[in-house]
Image (cartoon, rainbow, N blue to C red; front, side, top):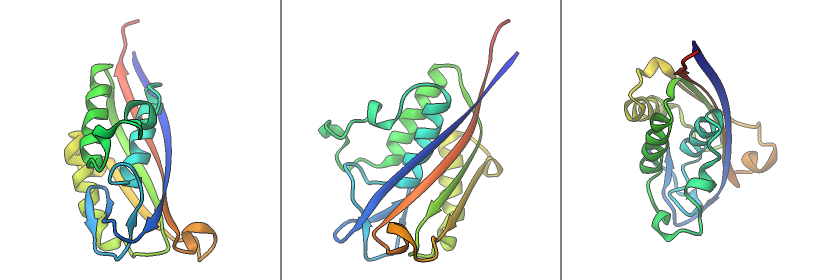
Length: 163
């Protein structure tokens, strides 16, 4: 019997000067970056939370607390790798990932394919199992005022269970 599970993740970080903007492990050419304890990659944070949630393993705050200095400035790709190892250790495989980045600026279309490749390669998936979209809020709310960037992600994971 195959056990399927669905997870949802959400993350948001404030845009600020003096930081690099990294999404999906890709450095984006933009004068502002996201504020956070790690590299503040909202895309990977939302994806990791969706995966951990689907497996009922908590969230990234539980596994990588901002009170732990070993995670200060760490690449979220490294954290993603640890989440993938945790899922594997619990017998889970990823079926697919779908994410939506919410940002008024910058325009992300030129970077999305590289983000998809990064995530698929890290997770051992084909790119057709990873979908990333970007949208604006038509200048409404904190994303529309260019104060921050948010991301929603959903995933499907599965495991083979004995009856």
